[in-house]
Length: 485
Image (cartoon, rainbow, N blue to C red; front, side, top):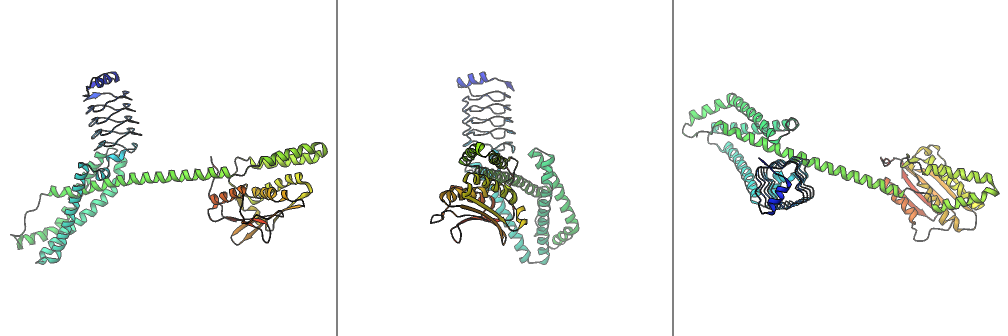
């Protein structure tokens, strides 16, 4: 095998010389070259970089293409038949019309489907048609044999001939059962201990062939010898000679190899489907987490601005109250900026955060705002609820309710158990919700969060009668979500 370099290949291709058979180009860089119609048969091209190369109608058959890089290459109508392609990279390669017949492409290759029988069957070329015809004829012939022997059993003119046909059918059925069982039992060990496909099929053929011979020998001396002897004695002129024993051995070997092949194809397909399902699941989970993060309530910048202004105005007038408000604001921000927190916290902690928020707003509004937080059943305080679920609702009540009235405003947060639901109501004595009742962006974000966390098991509703309030109904069971890493 002669050695060559990129420069030699480039010069030869420029001079319209395209015969590179039996050439050694291991790990050469041929990226970007136009090698259309070149003949690389029987060459060592392992590790060659063909990225962005033009390989239209190039003959790469019977070559070593292990770890060869065909990324973004144009392999239109190229011939890669009978080549070893373990670890070859065909990412974004143009492979329309390319032939991969019997190429040794392993599962790391994204185009391993081109070496599969299923690919040949759906291709419209002559090779696919020939394989389809062969398989169809073989199945048709087998079904016809089943019909024939079954008919002979029930219509035989002599009971002895019926017994002979029963023996033949029983022998074939038992042989088929044993062949399939052996193949199923051996498929995984063969793939585990023998990485090369042809070695797997060779070992399987030897084991199945020996096993079938053992079965038929036992069956013959146990049952068949007596039956056949009686038939030969009674019908010496009607019994024709049988095919040699080694011809019959080909049947279980063929069946075993076909079963083993399709088992491997099925495993690869199942693995790909499982990987895709896992990827889709992870993508969906990541999407949900991202949406939850986007919906996670943040402290309104106007609230922060107003709070800091209130603190500034209180520093000289009432330093103690300014200090109290600063500590409340610090406490609130510790809760908000807790990066290690889950999507859920106890109702007690969530209500404590809401109370802190309302105490800060109470400093700003003064006597115009009062609030109550009512939980009759202390056990409910340990129920997990989504973080930042109640505070945006309370903020919405102050912004669109209390801030719009001149009289004393009242916010009441009440928690009760209604059958299998945890009910949280936020009431304010501000103007009623406009008809038809609908929530703004803040309440819509709460609805979206509930939808992501609970599906249809949680609900948010707005009421004007008998009281103006926002009602949150949550199931007690916490969804299995974890914070993003």
